[in-house]
Image (cartoon, rainbow, N blue to C red; front, side, top):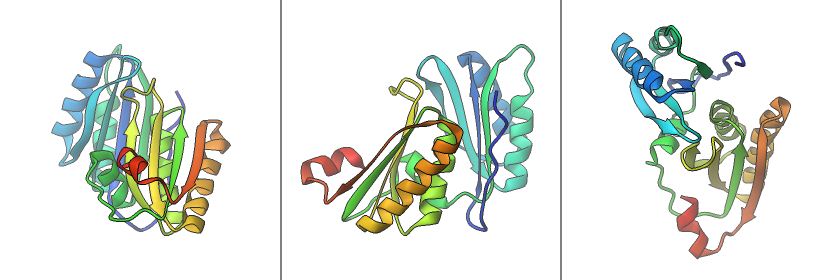
Length: 192
């Protein structure tokens, strides 16, 4: 298991994530996480291929405390974990699917082999350039992969995609990236 990734700037709430090899272990961890501190569960479900992800947000101290108790389980196998203090608020919104952008000049897509690093890469992207996150998909139906879509002016999207991909490349976790100037209107609905 790789150590938790920590990064931040003075914006937004903290995000915490635990990824378990077993589904039953994941539900037990999610219960401990929610009971420990006033955090909001953003994602709490089995994901491909047969793992379980718990993603939550709140104040840094609450997320840190919930991460600590969520990790405490005898016999359970924790695959990955994340503490992202002061995440940009749009990261949680993109996970929830509540982002709505009226117009898309250009769209960027960044794909990762793992969930935790994609969340950090999305945060890096939105803090690097003037872009808006559209959607973050995490592992479900993706064979454990994750991806983010974002939009803005072409030069800003290129800068954001390059920054996110660079972060993932440094860890050997980038699965793909693309910048699409003026996406076809039929494609736009699938990118949101």
